[in-house]
Each structure stands twice: as C-alpha cells, then as structure tokens.
Amino acid sequence: MPLPKFEDAKSLSDQELADQIVAVKRQLFELRMQKGTRQLEKPHQFKHTKHQLSQLLTLERERQLKQAES
Image (cartoon, rainbow, N blue to C red; front, side, top):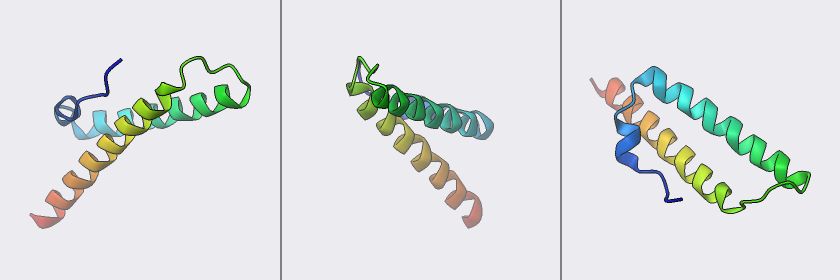
C-alpha cells in the first residue's frame, strides 16, 4: 500500500478536510488500541496513517495562513 498523495488532499473542501482529519485521528487511535491488545497485523499502517495526518494538518494550516493573509 503506497503512501497517500498530497494532491489527493488538496482537492478536499474545508469541511471535508476537517472530517478527514478527525477520521485519521480516530484510525490512529484504533491502531494504538490494536497494538496494545496485540491484535495489530500490519504495523506499517502507523507510518501511513501518521504521514496522512501530517499532510492533512499541513494543508489545513496553509489554508488558515492564506485566509489570515487576505
């Protein structure tokens, strides 16, 4: 499974972006719970999920700065 693309996140609206951030944070929490209960089968999912979360948060911050600028 390849890492998520930044261009895919750029096409989201502000509300979709916020919803996606919440969903990815929930997914990261579920991965931590699976790891704690030793049910995690794909440890590489941590890397992909954290990468996707950082992309989404970066895009959200860019949009906030752009709005404050104008």
